[in-house]
Amino acid sequence: MRYPYARWLPWRDESPDGRPTYYVGSNRPVAVVLHTMQGHAGTAREWAARGHFGQSWHYTVTRIGEIYQHLEHGDGGYHAGITATQAAQHPPTWPLWRGPATNVNHYTIGIEHEGFAGDVFTGESQRRASRDLCRWLATSLEVPLDRDHFPAHAEIDVVNRANDFDYPSAREWFYRYLLEEPDMTRDEIAAIAREEARRLLIEEDLEVDTRLRTVEAARHRLTALANDTDATRVERALRALEVGGIL
Image (cartoon, rainbow, N blue to C red; front, side):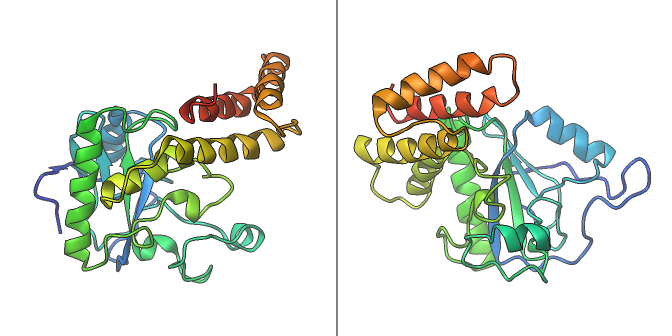
């Protein structure tokens, strides 16, 4: 099945070294997993054309609202798998997860959104394109248009993909847009952002009891980690605070 408003850019079925790049004919989708690409649309085009191994998905939604379809619905991508060890240590929170014995990629569609955590859906074109695709998929797959059937990747891999699809505050906003729920109040957005920042900063052993201590500690830690890769975690926390209107 193909989305009538998508450009067909098929994923090559073999990588350059001869490995399969997706699961042929094994998918029986009952849900759609939403992702942030952490990259640009050109990468999706390139990977599909050359048969990139290790990651593949059904749809890409670009910033300007274009949609590429890479796989038929009956084929499974490599987009949402989780190992038995990961699942045992950090079980998915997704209600429709069938357990480690069944590969998530065998019962889901994958949608990647061009952009990076914190800056997805900065334009109306991408928001509208994603919404229209999700609504069409709900009808085509005969599943409810709700959060259980359109989960974020963060609900499956709760540790490594905590900000996929986007930061929690932005993710919540999109769900309300998709499902036509009442918009979040500023207080609700701020509360989600505070919790997000709190989680990130606690992982750095920072004090986050009050807004003032959170901001001061984050800035101090960011300076201390200026030449350390862990600085990106604090940058993400600061971004979360900015999104919530706390800074």
